[in-house]
Image (cartoon, rainbow, N blue to C red; front, side, top):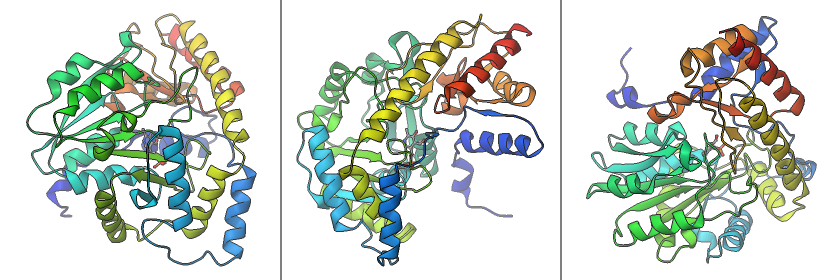
Length: 388
Ligand code: PLP
């Protein structure tokens, strides 16, 4: 079969492949603990479900304006203005099916073949995939374990060139749980200030899942908002992965172009889901706070449990719901380890290399699972490693 040449450059998200393999094993009767996929195990809060059900009953069953219903764009603009301390108008908001399409739209709208896009590594694999797909070049900045997986700022400064068209930031980070400090964000902004042609894609999808630290957005830094695209959404914060609801916030002219891309791709987000999105941001936030409290307890358990296993070392992440343990002291590499943990002891995790070359020597575990299942997984991993 003939596929377009660009399809050969398109990457994927390994988590979905491992999930499929884990499900196939379960279908054959195996017991699998899922630490591979990045989604909260909680149910969507009841008030949000109720809002969507009512919306369906009340006729929200039609197409909506492509960039989102006005009340949702207003609600999101207010939320981003309040949480980032910036001015945002509803025209700057594009509502998308999940936050992910903002990556695709941003790269399609702004990056030319041959341009360079600077991004962290290890990182969420879709940035690299999109950039390769359109024939541009990803340039990687290492997230070093020794620095709590923050940006290596010297490497970042060296990575900028005349061809740099976009910089991707992701704090809190998938896969490391690392968080960029205010000082680091200021340094990045300082390095970009005299490069007005460089766009910033700031993926802030985990901005509400933070432990002992506040969220800092580069859009809040002087001169940065006009060229920053904030990506955020509902999947992680409100346990709404399956609903597909996210958004980008950007300058109005770019928002119009992204809307045009959306019209070409999906027309608009499901109408009732958009109504639920208003309720999520304006209704009670207790469920979000409870989830973060639960994630913190799980984080503490998983980090302590991994550090108790000889040959594994794990730093304490400050955000998101992932840990990125170092497994270089073990006699097998991260790929074989991930594969055998699933096949032989029923623990689904990802190899660090699913997130780029600097993920070599690491695993990624999502601790968005119950403490009971985390304990079970740690026991199995410990026994497996001891028998190597
Ligand atoms: N950005 C990062 C860093 C993520 O980890 C994910 C999901 O795993 C997304 C964006 C996409 O989220 P959504 O489900 O809203 O498309």
